Image (tube, rainbow over all chains, first blue to last red; front, side, top):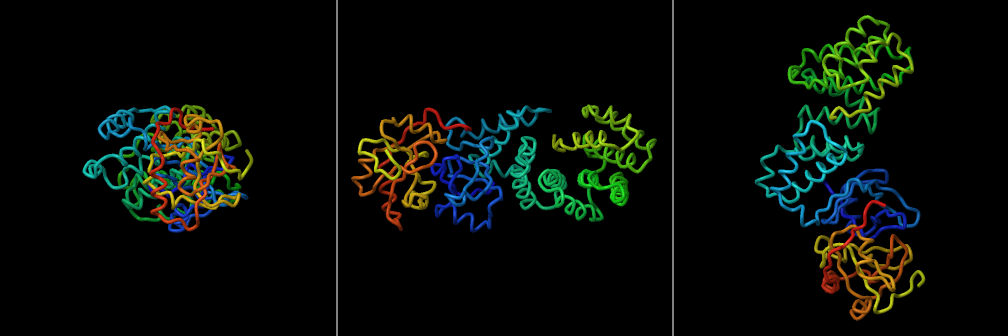
Length: 307
Length: 119
């Protein structure tokens, strides 16, 4: 986690943190941050995610996201063995509440802070950033998740799980950029199956907003990527939820292209693969691509792939 | 008390964080407050206890001293606007790191009974 210095004592009436002291300014300059950017702020005792902004009276400030506060100054949260045990227990759960996900995010950060290098080296480079990105996305903090997944990809380039999560995060933050990145990743001849599935999800989200006369080329491309997915490296290892989402997207494209029979057949497969997506049952009965269908698709796609 | 007024000698002065604030020395946390004073941020108000002032800080530990003790070292503490009971310990610009370290030693450590939470 890359942090910039902030003095949390220097808060404005609105509770924002002034970032005009020498310590903050130096870090901000080095990192090339601008108002509107998101960053991790720390004074080495606390960490907060924050959005940088200009305050008319104070100049550059950080608007704190209190949900992301991590106390590095809590004596009860300094034992790496205890942190690791609690983290392992939470990560092994198949589903986590918001509070548990928030705790996962904190524990990842605490373990990275307080464990000895030998303990950290048992984890691959970028592990903590990757896990934090997933947690932050599930907590509805995509901009901060993007900081973390960018770090994970920098520390361990070319890992398909990182690329998949990167696209998922970016889809929530900046769909136009996500579409460009998906095109670039799908253009690689050996693009892994999980990455192609996420490329399909991104392009399908983008294509949804296209008018009918512009949809067909995007739709055909989605179908082409979905076919490549079946032959792509790692196809046999993709999670059921990833496969279900890919087929759901493929089914909706077929529906919008007018092939209702094929669409229903594909979506019925989704029900069998991942019945957790409760809305899918309804999708098997769709016959036209209308506003109702679009809303249904948006609801399903709003869930992070990591969920 | 009004904006810019000096705090009386017996006013408690609280700064969030563990003294002597080695994570980031005091001189590098100084800035120009919009009211025109150069210095670092604290919580201070006449009639408030250390515990009450600490609740404005999100930290689990705080440093505390009095305005009088700070004044004895040649600095001023002025009420300035900001969150909670914000005040500024006014220092010369530039401020020598050694002088900042000496002032930091003045702050005693207290556990924060109720760190500030999400507003």
